[in-house]
Amino acid sequence: MPIDKIVVVEDDQIVRKYLEQQLRNRRYDVASVETIADASEVLSRDNFDLIFLDVRLPDGQGTDLLQELQTRPQKPLVVIMSSFGSVESAVACMREGAFDYLVKPFSSDQLEFVLRRAEEITQLVKVNRYLSHEEDEEMGSEMIGRSQPMQNLRALIRKVAPTQATVLIQGESGTGKELVARALFRQSPRANNPFIKINCAAVPENLIESEFFGHEKVAFTGAMNKREGRFELAHGGTILLDEISEVSPQVQAKLLRVLQERELERVGGNRTIKVDVRVLATTNRRLEESVERKEFRQDLYFRLNVVPIPIPPLRERMEDISELAEQFMHRSARKHGVRVRAISDAAKAVLMSHNWPGNVRELQNVIERAVILCGESGSIEPDQLGLPSRASISSASVPSPTVPLGGTIPSDQPMLPLSEVEKRQILAAIEFTKGNRTQATKLLGISIRTLRNKLNEYGVNSRGDDAGDDGE
Image: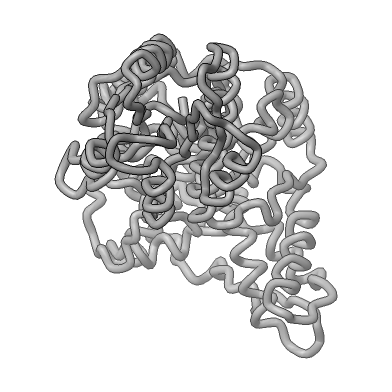
């Protein structure tokens, strides 16, 4: 519910009590006062979303308070009330910043209409305020590829998107989990409502509960104002919980309640707030294993895993590499103002021979770098790709049987499961860089966080050179 705290400023006791009761019946938190002085005191103590303000009050005109409210950084909506309504008076109040104008006495239906409009406007303002701080992620948000795995993925999205089902999107880092989430949102009945994302891995643990559920004023040190959480901002729409596996057990328990009951309480608050949201979650871990290790709640896993959508890694759809590379080339050329006409056959051969542990994101970064370094010929060549050569990492650094980093399996060695290949590549990179995680991530094309998670899975102490550990 976008609006939850309302002030009624009315000196007529009958009108004040009637309005107060009507609002409380609709589950609003109401403060009721008789004068401008009392209203100013209440407004100084907390943030309110809406004010019902009488024009004539014992200590002045309501329009004076209306003008003062317009100078505040966070302005509540103001509904002016008057027993002497006229068109001229209503127009004047609107010019001063009033949201609406009610002539007393007014009916319950009139009040309901005003409240509904106020809810809609407040929701739009809050969502736009949130989105104004977000990066523009719409650029290049299409899912590219004609391989069978991608066709299967698109077919599954078309089936699931029109429903209200909670979806767990699973895939390695860089496979495009957020693109799948956005496709689910765009093809859903909620497409015209908010789409709110929260990166659980990027928010400090001590703040993530506030980010999810919001907080009341002075709920903790630094909480100077009331703040709505992401679930409230997503009311009526969709919320994306990115990298859900990073959430602490304490927040997992509260998240379970939201999924079960569709209600929450802000940090420092005791009022239950109902929310109507569709939940999408992503993870690059095997959550089943996290459940077995008691790192993730089993009941929450079952709630999230209503419809699982696995995303294939790039190495399982190599036929898409050429199309992806071409798209990334054109996009990067426009972005950097560089004239590039083609990717040479030799460069394409190098792209096809690489194992792509960082998946589509790694490919995008490789092509962007190549576009920037491209010469006057306008053609991307192998040396501009910056991929490690097969001889750059000695096969002696990997226990036998081995797969050279970025290379192929020798014919005299048995085929290994992909999970084992991945493990050996990562351990080889760690050994080759003498434990420098930052350098290892550059070789592998993955983030520091992904490397740390993988090493934890393998039972290897991941503490090494922290240089450049940006928490991504």
